[in-house]
Amino acid sequence: MIDFRYHLVSIVAIFLALSVGIVLGTSFLEDPVIKATESLANQLRVGNDELRDQVDALQSREAGNDALITSSTPRLVQDALASERVVIVEAPGVTAGTREAAQQVIAASGATVTGRVTLTDRYIDPSGSASIDALVTEAKPVDMTLPVEGTTYDKAAVLLASAIVTSDPAQMGKVNPTATGILEAFQRGGLLTVTDQPAKRADLAVLIAPPEPYTGDNAAQQAGAIVSMALGLDEGGRGAVLTGALTGTAAGGAIAALREDTAAAEKVSSVDTLDMPAGRVVVVYALREQLSGVAGHYGVGPGVSGIEPSAPPTPTATSGG
Image (cartoon, rainbow, N blue to C red; front, side, top):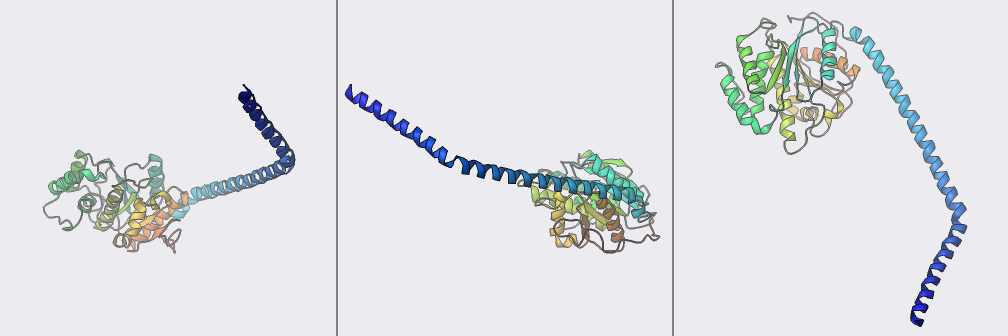
């Protein structure tokens, strides 16, 4: 009984000492701690307010710039691609809004948009490369030569490009039975869909990159499939531009893959600001530059030479039809 009372008193004494210590400590530290905390909170609040104001100002300025470019776009691109023909090819995942905005500016430049080819997820799935290879072999015209050491996507790009672009002015705008057959074969294989009449071949091509980088074990192959398509379109016609948002310049992005591929980057142009009104104007300028045999990389991401070509093109008559 004595031991129990002794322990009970000891425990009570300990808790009493702790309580007294806490009270005394709080009394001594209360003012400095509270004042320091309040001062820090006020500094953070002021800093956050300043940052919010800066963000609001930047967003307002960006909206104003976008509005100005949008209203000026018809004048900025007027006749830049007069009498040219452009086909639009989309990677899987491209939104209708992105494509329509690009198409409107291309049309405003005086070009005829022959049609649209939309690649499916099945096209860029490496596990289906064997079936794509078989389709290419079956659909290839007898007189066509495909890259001997090329990948499946290199060969598929050459074949598909032959159906929708040409460098021969006499063939532009004309339906080619062979081209129609190639497109139908790719459609039956579930590799793409077609809108309007891309078989009435164009001389220029815009390839819209996916909005997000590819990820996972197959990322490099998927991005490479888009690069192969861009290069096939460029070599089959008079020029091609790969375009998309800044996200496409990150690791796994199609634009990044193009810019890192020295051989492709020397031929195909790229623009990483398609989601901006100014970027869509630059796509037109890059297409115009392609007609002169020059490739450039424009926007705000890694590997660019500037926001736009150094000398915006002066509209001149071309041999397109």
